Image 1 (cartoon, rainbow, N blue to C red):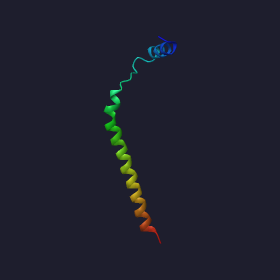
Image 2: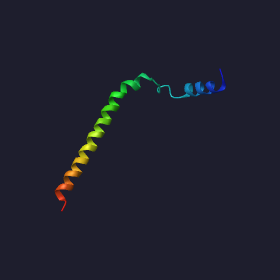
Image 3: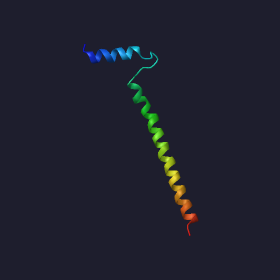
Length: 60
């Protein structure tokens, strides 16, 4: 075992035991990230449409 891997393993073992990393959780969370991005896209679209509508209503 080289020095770098020893340092990394020691740092991981001394960290909070409640914190853990499961790569498969990233795949499960893609659904929620996609929904969040879709909601942001829809809200930006609503803001753009409201701006266009207000510009047409109050332009001279």
